[in-house]
Image 1 (cartoon, one colour):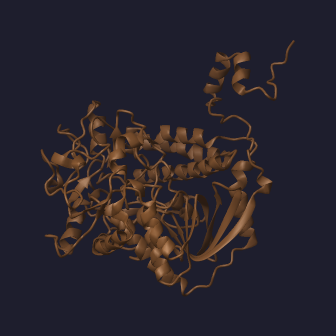
Image 2 (cartoon, one colour; image 1 turned 90 degrees about the horizontal axis):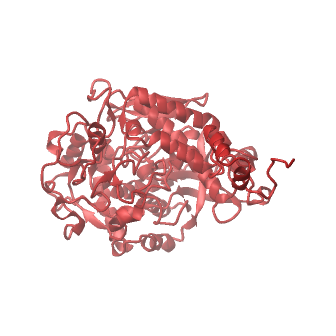
Image 3 (cartoon, helix red, strand yellow; image 1 turned 30 degrees about the vertical axis):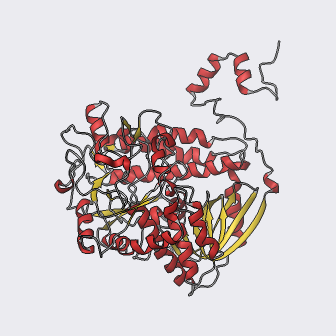
Length: 584
């Protein structure tokens, strides 16, 4: 009788076909396994883990992230006298959300009809008090100066940003390392001491010693289809959380839809943005990109037609998210809406939606991301400083609440990243003058090295792709992440906690690409837990957070932000921080 065991050189698919085919696959499916994905297979690394090399780097200021915030952080830290190194997971100016952003806000007091005080007050009304007015003012006040520097570097001359971003980096001879996955922030004696990660192109682990670190790592999502955030997975936020930094803003949601036709084809839907040269926008305070459309679909179950941002179509549906009267959309073009100076972009003629937001929309295309600048590290002051000495953040990595928990000003996200990057760079450089280069113990380096290599060394486990797909199935449904109620939030949380407790420690990788995916998947799981628990905690509805079981705004109990931090026992802890205050 022939053995039913597979031969060493026989694939699982061939063996299953010979040994029972359909019945075998059905049995594996019942156990939650899919041989197509390989999550049940032994881990056979394509690289020799024992031969991976090791390199150390040193800088006064380490900037992590190569987008708009990272650019200005590196330039301003250098100009303030620090030795700077910029490390990016992708290519300078060509990864994350920066290449997609084509409108940058400039507040020009000499030409605007609205004063700076009036602008801050108007944003505060639209944001229903959720904005940090210090950062709202800071963004507007310094936006024009940053735009003038970008103009000098050639930023407005091309839809591609690498050339203009490279110019000031090369002129200053700032050290730049691209395609490096940072996996750990390192803390010694209570202060940040550097970071660690690995190259995506070489079998090399890298340690970065630094007096100060600036996170410009962007926000993130659950790798949804149809919107350009697939390579952003809250890496910086989770790394900082793991060493004790406070995190905020996880209950809010970005409401960017994609289009139902070829929904996963991001470039098809948004090529009009990618191919456009950047332009400058003026004051146009809105109340946009919340979950109005999500509620309409939930309530009616019908396909809807997309209007201008925030309009959510023409039909009126009872209930749903509250929009202040002065910011409600009317028929026709939004009042006072302008495109880049020098003329309205053709995609917006007549108040039409921008590229990617026309036709029949599909939700979830930015799932897992909050409103720009509303999530990330909690700042303890107006210098983008976190509660960890020496650790700063800027742009979408900083929970500055610059615009609050709703999208209030077109172009403010890119302007805010530039302004905050510059502020953080100068502040980090000043901090460095008073500290010595930290020493990282050999024990800490060995510990970090082992944690980086762990997915490659596991003999078996779960593939990052399969765990990510499982997480997406839990978190992306409209009735979980956007239209919330306690029963369903708790149900989703039970699944996510299982992923965190069991699947996260068993993530495996066979090569450097999978190793990157393993860390990204782990970060998404932690972020999902934060989002669900913060959404349960906020028992009200406001801006881009909507609870079916608490549909009204509660100004008595919830004029506060939610901060998240890791307790001494490793558990996830929560606290309220009243609006218009700094954390204690």
